[in-house]
Image 1 (spheres, rainbow over the protein chains, first blue to last red):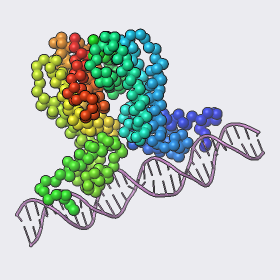
Image 2: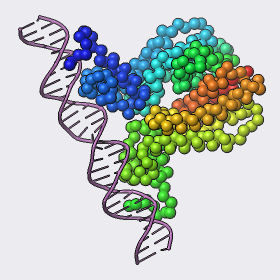
Image 3: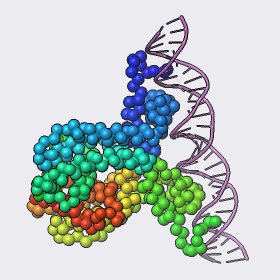
Image 4: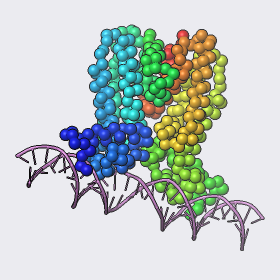
Length: 195
Length: 195
DNA sequence: ACAATATATGAACGCCCGTTCAATTGGTAG
DNA sequence: CTACCAATTGAACGGGCGTTCATATATTGT
C-alpha cells in the first residue's frame, strides 16, 4: 500500500524523526540501522530515503532542530529585570526544557562525535549561542556588583553542566518533584555566584 | 610472526586495551570494529580473542578497571580533617584524576547504554560508591553546621556533574592552567554549599 | 635438540549494513 | 474514466560485522 491512511496529509516524515530520536537516544546512532528505524515506523528501509538523503543528515537535522528550538524557546521566555531574576529564569527554563526532551538532549550531547566535521561545527555554533545567553546574564550581574564570578566562561560551563546533569538521574515520580529539584538547583547556583 | 619482540613478556594485551580505549572514546563502541582495533595494534582480528572473550567483555573490563582505579585512587588520597578541607580535597582530586584520563572518563559516561544489563548494574554500583564518598563529606559538613545543603543527594549529583564537566571543554595549553581551573571550581563549590 | 606451549594467522561462517532503483500501488485532479 | 503523481515496496549491490578454528610459527622448559 502506498499510503497508511486515506487522509490528505502524509505523516511518515514526522514519524521517522520520532522513531529516530527514540532509537538513537536509546541505543546510539551507530548501533541503530535504517532498517530498524523503518520497522519502528512500519515501512521498508527504502522509504526512509523519501524523507532524508542519508543517515548522517537525519542525525544532523535532529540535532539542529533541537538546538534551534532550544534557542527560540529561550528567546521567547519572558525576561524579568535584574541579574538575579534573569539567572533564576534561565535556571528554571533550562531544567524544565531539558527534562521535557530527554531523548533530544541525550542525542545532542552524545552523538557529536558521529557528526561529520562541517555538521559538527554548525551544531557547536548553536550551542555556543545558548551558552552565550547565560554568560551575558552573569556578566550583567558581575557589572552590577550582584555576582562575584572569578571567570565568566568557567562559571557558564559549570552552571550548564550542573543543570544539564539533572537529566542523568531525574525520574518521573521519584522522591522529588520537578519543581522541588529546580528550586534546590537554583539555590545552589545562586549561592555559587552571589557576591 | 607469532611475537613482535624477542623479549620475555608479551605486551599485546595492554596494547589491545590501549587501542580500544582510544578508539571507543573517539568513535564510540558501536562504531569501532574488532578489525580496526586489531589493525591499530598490528595484529589480525582473530588474535584479539586471546585477550578478551568478546567485544562486550572488552568494553566492560575497560569500564570496570577505570572505576575500580578511580575508587582506589580516592581511597589512597590523604584525608585532612574538617569538612571544608575534605571537600576541597575531593574537588581537586576529581578534576585532576578526570583530566588525566579523558578517554576512560568519556567511555565510562557514554557507553553505559552499550552494556548488557548485568554489566551495567556492576558499573552503576561502582559509580554509586564513588558518589557516596562525596555525599558523606557533605553530610559531615552539614552535621557540623559548616554546610547548608537542602538535599544531600542532589548536591552530590550537582557537584559531580559540575566537576566532570571540565572534561568537555578543557584543553591543554588553553587560557587557564589546570591549577587555575581547579581553584575556580573549588571556589564555586565551596560557596554553593557553605552555610 | 626436542617437546610443549603460547601466540598469531588467514580463511571462512552467517549475518546485517547503507543505499539505490525499477516496478507497483493508491489517491487525486481533470 | 483516465492520466498523473506521490508514496512505497522489495530485491539487489558491495561491503563490513563478530566470531571461530585449523594451521603455523616463535618461545620456553627440559
